[in-house]
Amino acid sequence: MSDPLTVGDDDGNTPLEAGEREQLLLTYVTTRAELNAAEQAGIIETDRWAFARKRNVLDTGFLRRLHKRMYGQVWKWAGTYRTTARNIGIDAYAVPMAMEQMARDVQYWVSHETYQPDEIALRFHHRLTHIHPFPNGNGRHGRLAADLLSKQLGHSRFTWGRVNLQSPSKTRRIYIDALRAADNHDMQPLLDFARS
Image (cartoon, rainbow, N blue to C red):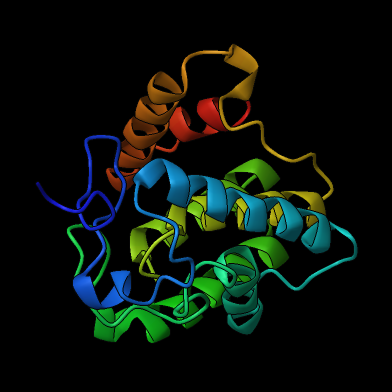
């Protein structure tokens, strides 16, 4: 039987490389459910910290610190760009430059009001998940970053499908499908999902 922490699943979870799995700080974690629970504790604390004051969410240094705060109690590599290939995302060597370019693009969209605020924040989220800068936690990191940007743009946080009260697996499937539509330049499903 394979290690549940090193394989992906049909819900879009990213498989972890053996070297990344070895950097798990919590020796009691042996299942994906235990890992998710441990990571969630850091995410809750980071959420409070992130919204306590204004943050420069379009600074790549801040984005790395945000990831480190979210996952630093669980993973040694938290806040560090990935160095391994993934079944999604860009080539690992291109991550640092892509993150800088993404930040500049979003700053331009904001300053020139290229899109409506929700669309700017969701295009930012989509770019983050498309780059897939970290070994794990990219979707959760990207959603928190998009929420921060939405607040900075004078709007509320996104609901990310929580209003519909569907099963978590169905909500995740809708989210993954919306990201895939955005991959094909159709932002409407992501816009609809994020406020549903």
